[in-house]
Length: 184
Ligand code: BEZ
Image (cartoon, rainbow, N blue to C red; front, side, top):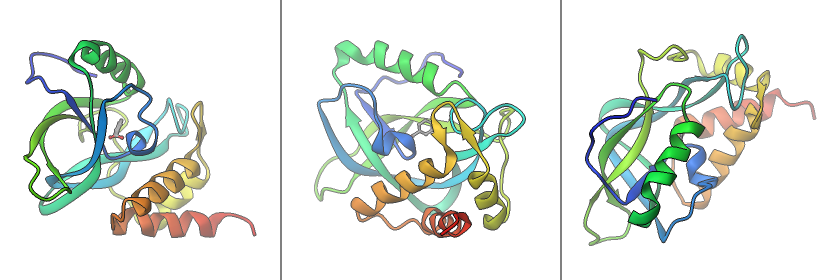
């Protein structure tokens, strides 16, 4: 993961595993969105949901004008920011950069804030990019890594988004396909 001089924030935005497993202390959390981005299973995972030579597929963000990606925003204490960001830099070292984006809350009338977001761009070595969703589902079904089965990642993300009443056609279509790959 790259780091450098960046805007500071007390907010972290999760749109993947951080939606259901933040693994860091936070003061509050609130559903939020980032504008102009969409969530895609286009990043390879060789350290969590796959292994080198047999990568799993996890989410990254792709620019798409007019799109909106919903996730969960977490407010952390400034005193723990360096430690939390350090832990996340270690946890998400497999191709993700930390960027700062504007977060718009679901709560009407709440002001937008800047928040840290992890994004794997198309130049990182584990980037896989687009594929037919059936091929992505087959790859997910066949992938396992130190953090568990890749299929679990898809199912837990879909479940968490559904609980937030978020509609994400890409995630829910993939969920249906990976369920279909499982033996009855
Ligand atoms: C997320 O849940 O936002 C996330 C965490 C690490 C890498 C990519 C996304």
